[in-house]
Image (cartoon, rainbow over all chains, first blue to last red; front, side, top):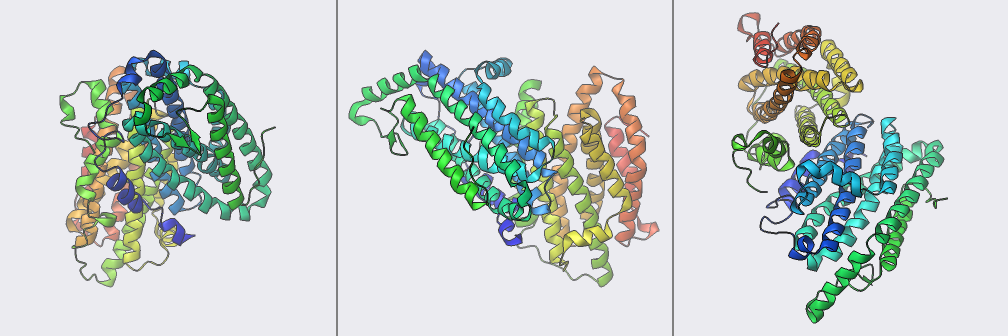
Length: 293
Length: 258
């Protein structure tokens, strides 16, 4: 365990993250990068960008509360130290996505009301299931919920958003690239650290699988309502992509061309990817994926 | 990462969003952490320590680890009930600072030949400091923001700032360089506590009496810890700096007199 945890030290984090892939960035993107004009002027796209960013902030606020709450519950010093770095990663994500709302024209005075207006209620329920485990200082359930389920979901959502933004919004795509690199590290820690604890505490399996089942149900409901609400914005995105004709770059995610796909197809691609990842990752730590009831 | 400029030119809202940010934190630490793995430049050479000096240093560093573990657990525990986003983000930078301090102190212990630092800390930890840690975490568990930020970012940070600053000026070169980096962080943490509590005390002056009562309770534990630290470092009574006086003066500068 000690050897694997040495790879998650504060020193390694400093070298790879702030002194590595975040070097020369401002709020995670290039200093001269701006939101594209379409995202600011087109009413439908503008609202969709705000709605999407609000979900990212809600997810990251949950991750910040969970990772900081797990520091005290961690059974050993190396895990505490890794969770310290994860706490600051999640705080940075809250900060950069909040900054994106400001870049989209939301004022600091309207921040909380904007979040309340657009946050998906299913995502709130998803967070509540996890934070209940954190409040009980349940380290094993907390790390599975946080570093496998929440981070696994975030990782795939960020990848899809990044594919969509690669051509149309390089600023947002760069912001997401840094968060994807962070999430990869968090998921890696969860898999490596928790497998051993699950082996030691097999009696915890059914309760933790139930938490995964509840969180997965809320996650799928979040995807469904979020994509249903974005039909008009998706059509605008298609129109803009079509206007670029042969000049448009491919925005492909899991084999689906996002510039032409319907919201149903996009929802299917995202949900299938996340669930496949869950099954693989949960299997690696000795848990069996449970479909939502 | 980007330039933040002089934050003191900003109004209060912009000041808080600038200073309590990841960007600002990174610019602050990068100057003294760049090319210094585990807080020390590879060019800094070890000097030979006598067995007595080495043993005293190990005990002192074990106690620093107790203090930093307390700070790590307290600052992370406070994020859940911090009053706003800026405070949560500042505390997140503090969490990683405290984690880094603990990591470099443990690393130094292994350099000094300690095979199992966690076990050694268990053997050598000061009882007064352990009691202080328990009391601090009680305040955090009770989700009392003013009391917790006072005990953590004023009392504990002043204790560490005072002890580390004095020790850094007399320690061997490797320990000294490591401690100066920690002192730079503690100064920032104290600044946050002073700023946050200063605004709250202006709005609710009666809070001062409540916090003074907590200070009186914690002072005894702090003063005992400082006295034990001097003994561990093998400094004779005649040569001991007035750490207790320095600690009380540092807290008094924040408006809390004995």
